[in-house]
Image (tube, rainbow, N blue to C red):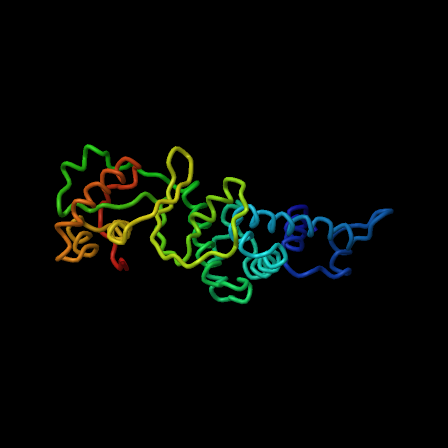
Length: 266
């Protein structure tokens, strides 16, 4: 067996969720005077999987706090069996957790909706931290906005609807506190973004959420306003929206898109 083939074979054995048999281990690695082939391979295999689970703990501390440690570890092990790491970076490890947990609610503890809110928030946190940034619409450009101008949002921004105040919960965890798991339902709208390399959670009014959602699909100013605001409420809401636009421009959220994107769901 050539070196490259041997390396790939051993890597596959280490990264496989199921345990290796003793005969497989003997074919891959030699024993020494203290450990069998199986024991030597098992050391590396357990270290690898422990590192993956530690990475999920680091990326989803809010979910860990909502669940207990044992429940979280069962969830992590089951998730990694279905979705082992396939990326060169551990940053992507939890990218499929939301969809997986939706399909496997038995791993979410006693409150599936709360766990789902937290998973969405924490994945959005990861996206906000290191996703691409493009040229933003400058604040002075707001005076020249035209109804047909197609706007977009920075790729690092996520817009969420929540049933529980998971943003407050996660902020407390970030500050080293241990918040109570007994969260009362409190629906709302969130923008998860970054500013000066720090991730922030910003509460939105429903009209702001709808407008930003339209822009996330690369929508014209005219169509975004028609989708986001009821005609009867337009005069009153527009004053609020003007203030919101100034804030979004200051944060660097808005971009100029070249073409519209179809299929936007508000």
